[in-house]
Amino acid sequence: MAPVGITRRVLFPSGDARPGGNDLGSEAACIRQALVGSLVQVSEMAAFGLAEICRALDDHAPAILHLAAHSSFGGIHLAQDGSDLCIAYTDLCAQIARARFPPRLAVLNVCDSAPLAAEMSKTVTAAIGWSHALDDGQAQVFTRQLYRSLAERRSVGDSCEDAEAALSGPHPGCPPPVPHGDTGGRAL
Image (tube, rainbow, N blue to C red; front, side, top):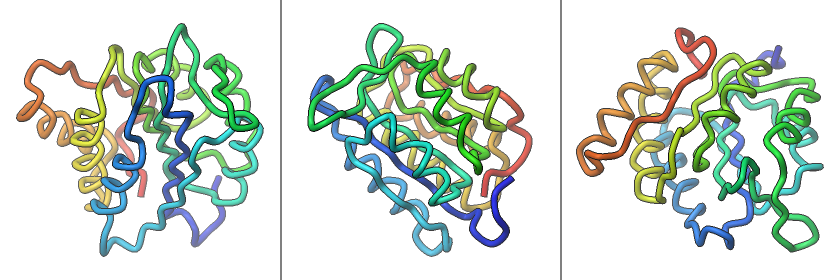
């Protein structure tokens, strides 16, 4: 349970962008732009390491953890000592489970992250992951609309559906992400 009065926060940790050549900064900008005027605070952590996530969750007590990173072979590319380090999904979930104030929603804009979302939904109320690869443009379109809807106090499920509809316009062949957990409540 998050502390009272500080639950309108988003924590945006991004992994090492080098392996996939991702533009993760633009995704963070989409979140900030979608939340303008909403009084939701966004905190960013670039190229974070596994040991930092638990402390960051406790320090920020976010309602939403939005993770953007490259993934391969069931792992997520984080950073350690300035170098790329691929971390197993189970190790990331274990660190998040250790947090005193786990988020209510985890948005995992990571290729093939549906298994990570399923695992993470055991710790957080709801998680959204992708069952396929996605590119920066798809992640940005989805993210922008998701946060607009969340800021309007729509449920996680309705916000995800709104974002899927926005995604279908410019990216008609892109399968939607997969929500896990209880998506009937609001995240903000």
